[in-house]
Length: 414
Ligand code: GLU
Image (cartoon, rainbow, N blue to C red; front, side, top):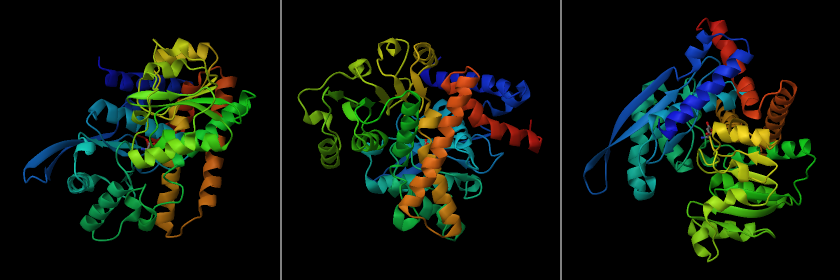
């Protein structure tokens, strides 16, 4: 069984347990255990050298019982069927946890955008939308950014969909630039959402953010913004990592200058001589550990080495089921991915609402509304986990699946 197969299987196992806790039968599980619709497409793209290259892409629509499906599109060489399916199921959970009127969706294209020109990326983005255009839309399935896609890619996709449908369709896609109907706060929404849940977790553990020692795996969009926000709140960021190594300083790294260096050079670790191997990151003496990179990073080999009191999963699927058990048994408070990383889709929802209304909110409005949603979600899940003796992940799935399962039953689908 491959690692990605594991992602789907382990998600299904928790879903099954969560549905049983909610009192649903196996018929409901059979319906939600995979996306209701899964599209596989092939996208021909004229490359700059004149040749045509055909890329494979996917779009998964997990369940639209409560509203349109919602979720990002990733451009990455490792994109595959199982991963896209699992990610779409996690989106259902994120939307359920934050009570957004959406089901889960996800898309991906197998490609390496780092090796493509802007023009090639534009043609690929437009080709992707053309191929799925009959099955997506502001009221049916709404894409967004994900790994290696950004506001520019969203703009091309929005433009292509608008051309096909012969009218401006701002609400078709979220994560757009501000000048094209984007929302204030969307670019750092995932990070802000994660920090809000960390603050709530710290309260429950009688810890204060100011002075706590934080290690972050990943210094991309989520990781670097999380570092900055926590640093501004007085936390000491003792380590950050990138794919090729980690920086560590027990007295706290200079986050402001690292962010400046990142803006100039793209990556920061190659600029330093003293880099520690990535495996060491999880062993660092810290209070809060934030995996904000890839899936399956915390596993049975390294979970017992973790010294943090709180693990906040800003990445999708960073902890294996075995590691979740090891950490929970050791009383480490896990903020599961479907909760910790739900800030992005929450502000995407605000963006979609603003597009539909044609009325735009201030950054302050967005932050207050995001705060409300994330605080409520964290406490609901934490209390459920405490009162019903579940681990945080199972509790998150119970909260995340409840509304979709109820709506599915009311509709008579299962
Ligand atoms: N790709 C992000 C996620 O995995 C955001 C999805 C969205 O905004 O719809 O949560």
